[in-house]
Length: 324
Image (cartoon, rainbow, N blue to C red):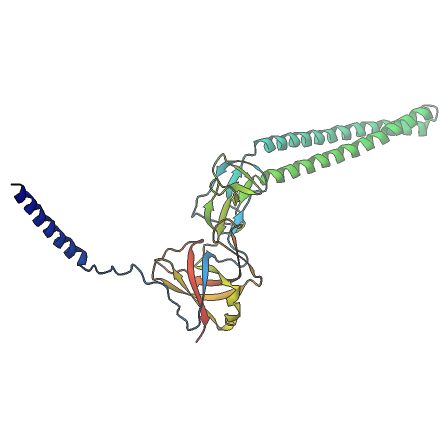
């Protein structure tokens, strides 16, 4: 009985080994790639990393910072929303400054009332002096010279008081106007027409002219980021300093952009070069992430195609070559 069991186990092990060898020997065809990797379309093309931006005449995206510090009371826009120049975007708590402005307005109103009182007093003193002077002109014995001089001095003092009141009112109005201008700075407005790309704060958060504190990176970033919302966009690419001499002249320059993870290819139009070679940075929000390589920034423009979603901040591959 024991020999039969061992014999059966040996047969099972033999058959298992054959099955294992057969399954391991079966060839598995590799799956086709999800997309065709980007290849250099030029005979002597130069590769560069690129990042999509809004199409601006100067600079990059528009970074917005408040002119005053305080907690955010209202956020009036959402990400992706189109805005016009002058539209309110965000409000900083203005309760303290608003109370100061109201107090200064009351002081200006009080100073204005003092002008009316000084004018009425001056009119009374003027009439008294005129009556005494007329009476003395008719009969010098009717009014003493000392009384006439006192009336003249009182009239001059009234004129001086009116001038002081007018200047005090003017100073109060200027103070009120300056505070009103400062109060208007508690509302962050759109400097130009465009689209809101990101809102980097929340109601109740503290903001300052340095921006808004970013929890994950531990640094400060713009409170809002916006840019143009036209039919074109820009690509800023960084060419390694070793390859600068291989760049074709601007009038002969041609470039193509490849959207990562897809087979989408778009032609680029040369706009300008930033004539200042800078340390290369990792394409992130932290400007301190630098490496030893230095790069030359080039700016290209392209038409936004229909049916393809492209966003500012998206990384792309760029090949730069010479026109045929």
